[in-house]
Every structure is written in C-alpha cells, then in structure tokens.
Image 1: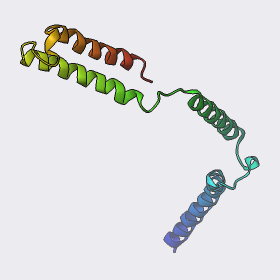
Image 2: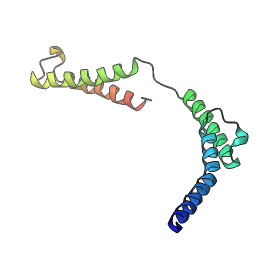
Image 3: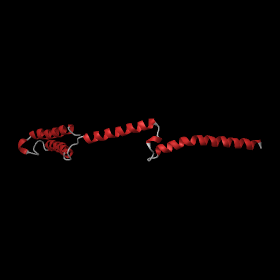
Image 4: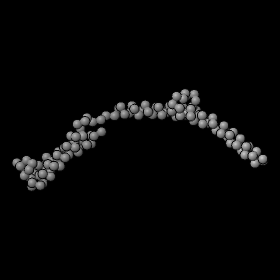
Length: 126
C-alpha cells in the first residue's frame, strides 16, 4: 500500500510538473502561430521580428538597385574569346597562310586583338 501511495504521489508530482510546463508550451505555440498577435509575443521577439522586417526591406531595395548587363553581353564576349583563339590556332596550324592569306602573320594580331576585347568585356560583366 505504501508503494501505491508513493507511486500516486510521484504521478501527481509529474502531472503538476506537466501543468507548469504547459503554459510555456502555449507561449511557444502562440509564437509559431502565423495568426498570433504581437501582444502574445515577448518584447525581445517583437524587436527581433521588426529587425528582420527592416533587413528584408533593405535587401529588397539593394536587389532592385543592382544593375545587370544586357542579355547579349555574355554571348558576345564569349564569342570574341573563342573566335580569337580559333583565329590564332588556325594561323599557327597553317603556318600563317590562313585565315587571311594576304596579311600572313598579322593574323596573330587580329586573333589576339579579338581575345583582348573579349577579356576586357569580362571585366565589365556584372
């Protein structure tokens, strides 16, 4: 009998402990509830949420202010780099006879010039 009474008293103590924890759990549920009012939240959480909203607004403004290149920019500089490289390779493989036979080794200057323009465009890429 004494064991039964001790078990009951322990169960009663556990239930009391759960009852004490229950209001804390209700506060957590209130915080997680999207419909919860700001009055249900502690002041620290309200300040944290206000700061988060301010940060979100600043980030959205910064994103709107960012400038991007036009859609044609990347394909043009990539094409200039590839065409310039191909020009130089063709010049070396044909010993200066092609791509333009009349100018011989000046083909190298044209190929490197195309690659240089493409490289300079990469520095303006945003």
